[in-house]
Length: 159
Length: 159
Image (cartoon, rainbow over all chains, first blue to last red; front, side, top):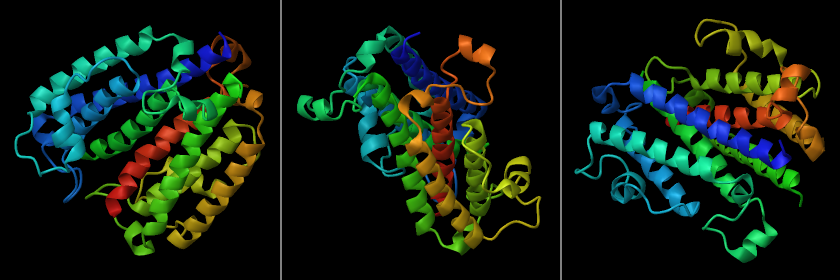
């Protein structure tokens, strides 16, 4: 294994492990439980689930891997706070989106070659990237992994 | 920058950024607030603070960087659940430990050379490491960064 292969594996393992943890947690929570707030007057489980899907969808754009799967989630789960949009998908629908998205992302991530992970993501200019080569595609996985862990720590309170 | 230098910077930046976020959050919460539970019947803020210090202390051992700074925190904040040990340090004391530990770890991490980060941590055997070179010192930073994000997502509920 080259150093690059080792690092890519480390970071993708961490992402996959965090997805697996969150997925197992979601499967252990009923639809009714996900309708509850994680703490009094805080976000509901359903909002966090939709929020994670919306954020992960945006990774497809940042990584130049195609179009969003569920662009309709941007407005209610990223742009708006919880309990301000009345028409949102059901937990059942969001679970289907989540499962499908996890599969699609895994496939696309597995297809990327180690050296491709070191190329720039779409939100950084070529100029800035020349100065800051750490703003590469793999860094998107890294930041979204901590984002996922942050909200998993909240969802677990519904148990 | 070599590929190794880029990866080490990416992962250490993420750790330092996560520490900074958590530190700013802790500074925004009063001692009284940290005595509260993050949600009904869940861990208290003070327990999570002690838990983070205990886990970060163990990184010194795993990274072969010296002795723990606060070994007395293992029993009440790692081995035992919250509210089962009556004699624990005050929030004021824990804040002092946290600040000092953040400085000590930063200094020690900054002193490690990029290639040293790729060497094995102390909890993996030389044999296993030969087969799994991803179980290196930098991987400890990676896993502890998601651990930190997980609990920061809980502490933020005290706001």
